Structures are given as structure tokens and as C-alpha cells.
Length: 236
Image 1 (cartoon, one colour):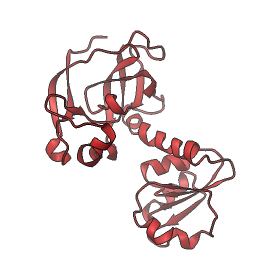
Image 2: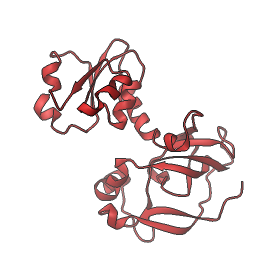
Image 3: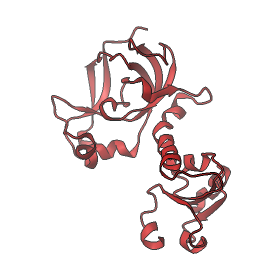
Image 4: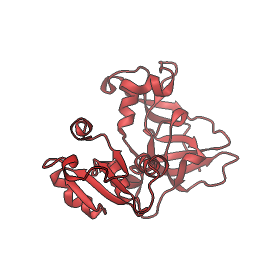
């Protein structure tokens, strides 16, 4: 598939307020692919809170170095698009495949026209999702899955409390079908939404505290989606 030799992308060359540091760069040269990489023409990209946090406060800690005008950093973790080139060792994808992906480290850079990433961080785009919908899935779904299965190690019959059930991650936790009982907190306007996603019990945090509603020691795990900053001080 033919693609241009240059592309546009958002980059930054200093840490600081994102509205000051993030710039749209034009005529960036296409990178050569490693043998295990694919080049994706981005159709849709989503914005994750981690994107701006890397630019403003967390970049040095997580990326290990600072950007510079000579070596600016790209931005963006999630996107969906079409494969336009594959490395010599790539087995799972071919040119023309629709994919979605979440990247970290050196392959961060989904807020661009073209995106080079490792084969193993991409997956075939579900046919029932359009590109906009698919781009919003990867990071939040991976976070939900890892929290429930790898960290909490929930089993069928366990009970999990999701603080922030209507957050993007929270909604994926609720829908992760492992046979656990799900209790979720949310605001009044989202109670019916959370019920429709499959929560067994919903606590409206604008009306009551979960610590007053739930019996002591009645949950096996708590998944905190960071949307109720006072929940631990007031309720734990």
C-alpha cells in the first residue's frame, strides 16, 4: 500500500503545561520499521488522562528522560486504524487489516497520521465497533482486565466494589464477566446506566456513603477508579 513519506503528529519538546508545550508538527519523516513492527494509518485516536500527565507531571518518572527540540516526544496511547506496512517477521497482520492498539514507551504516539508500533500491542478491530469506538477501548479495557484478573485475582462468587462505576475503566470492570458480584458507586444521573451494564448493587455517592451501606468485610476486592478522592479518607 502506498503511503506518504512524511506525516503530521502532535509532539512536545519540554515538560510543562500541555496547552503550552504540545505542538502539531508537519512533514515528519516516516520511520523505518523493525522486523516485528507494523505501520498503521490512524483513523481515530482517543485521549487518555495519562497523555497530559506525562507532559505535565509524570513524564520524567515514567519515561526516564526529558524531551528536547532535537528529540521531541510523541503523545497518545490508543488508536484504531488500518495497517499499511508490516515488518519482515510480522505474522498476525497483513496490509489492509483494521486494528486497534495501546502502546507504551518508545511506541507512544497515537495522536498522529501514521503510527509505528510493535505487533504484539495491536489486535484485530472488532467488526461490531467503528474506528471511533475501537480507539476508546484499549487502555481502559486492559486496565480493567489486569486489575480484576491479575491483581485482585477475583473468582466466581467473590464480591468487588468499584469506586467510580461510570468512569471508563469502571464500566469495563462491571462488564468483565467472571461470575463475581459487582457493587459500584456512581452519581445520581448514572445509576440506571450502571444497572444496565450489569452491576448487582449501585450506591449513589451523592446520597450515601458506601461504608454506611455495606456490611463490614463484605467485599473481597475494591477497584478504585480515582474519581472519588475523599472515599478512602471518609469511608475506608
